[in-house]
Image 1: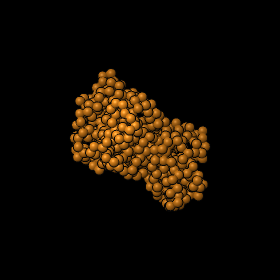
Image 2: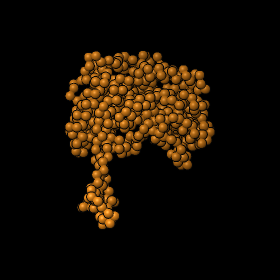
Image 3: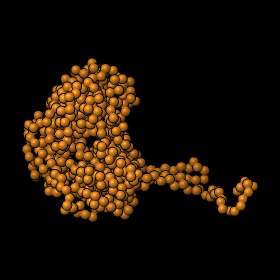
Image 4: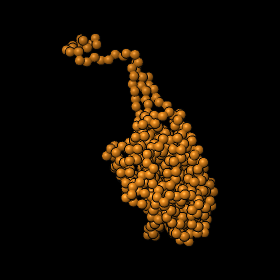
Amino acid sequence: MASPMPHIEASKLTIPDVITGHVAGLSALTNSSATLLPVHFPGTGESIASLQEDAAAQVNTAVSAARARFHSGEWSQCTTTEKQRVFRAAAQAIRNNAHELALQESLCAGLPFAHLASRQIPRAADNFDFFADYIGQLAGETYDQLHDYRTVVTRQPAGVAAIFTPWNACLALSSMQIASCIAFGNSCVLKPSEFAPLAVLQLVRLLESAGLPSGVVNIVNGRGSVTGAALATAEGVDRIALTGRGNTARKVMAAAAARLTPVHFELEGNSANIIFDDADLDRAIDGALLSAFGNSGQICIAGSRILVQKNIADRFIEAFVARTKDLQVGDPLDDLTEVGPMAFAQHQQKILNYFALAENTDATLLTGGRAMPELGSGYFVAPTIFKVADNRSPLCQEEIFGPVVTIQIFNNDEDAWTIANDSRFGLIGYCWTESLRRAQAFQQRVDAGTLWLNTPIARDLRAPFGGFKASGIGRDGPRQAADFFTEEKATIAALGQPAIRKMGLGKRTKKDDAHS
């Protein structure tokens, strides 16, 4: 384990005393009576800034600014070539500022700096490059099958979107939602997590420095119960996209129902990682460690329910537990750190509560299961493994969202599919096997939106991403984004002068009708 970490060096980054939103036409969404929320560095628990919470008045100002920019046509009606230029410049600006962005995210959310710099920040840049490519290939549709008519199907931007993003991958997920929204000419108001406000503010400044008109992307800050509730119910919002927890999504969906606002939700998971007896065991162990403890375990696509076949279970468990004990836990700003602190104190306590709950179940603790005060005052949780006999355990049925894994032993293939699907979630599935038959069965039998076969986390941005059941509504992806963030319009035009049935010519007879 790493030694206790030093205090933050102030010279690393300039952080304002009070972090405010970002809205067109305003230097800051100032509100002298606003609530100030403390922002802590999870590595030490020390306060690094205050966040000004935006109430309904400030949220409505942001929505109005987004609406005004949309109606101006400066972005909503600009050419594809210009959008591509801005997106490519933005992608390069993100890469040029990757160190600062990773540092901002690490200071707020406690995620390991090395992981952010090598994975999440490059992904944010890739999102803008990807949508620049996609809109350059997007085409309309033309139908000539109806005789004497031509039907042309076009798209137009939906208007103003409300976007909600979480703290565990704020920049990567915010950039995906922003890019997929504004690529089609929309404007948006983004509410990032109150626990990770810095990097996304810098992202919007970089977008505007790359040529994006101010007001296309606006930011409001605060808790979900205050700022989030105001944004979900704001008049003038045409689309709502949320990445987060199911309870939040239910509240947002109820608010959206009042105005029949379309919603897109990417939600929770507690995904099965199935390891068969014919798997390459070394690769399966590497993949299981990465999918379970990457991003400090604070990731919706974690393979946190490991299902291992009986005749290899002892070998797998022995090796997996030994490797877990050797994970480097510590200062998220240290390049060698593999598992950082939890993002905030309440989240650390939530995970510790699960440990207390497990004491009253059949779960056997194999390692971890505790806080780590030896690392100082940060929000650390030791990487934890439970051996569990019953998949109905809360450890298996709820999203813990931390460095916590359960291991269950199964006998045969049918057991594996049954246990994997015994969940209200259906976001991800993992499988390790050298059998073509099992690989095909995995694809057919496991109910999840994304399946990874003989690999840990990989993402092709051309493919849809989203979940079954309580893991979400809708999908991320280029075509899916076009469907969600645009309105389709069919225009039917006559070719020449096809006959039009005449009406209103007075008294007629059947004989007249026969000749008309």
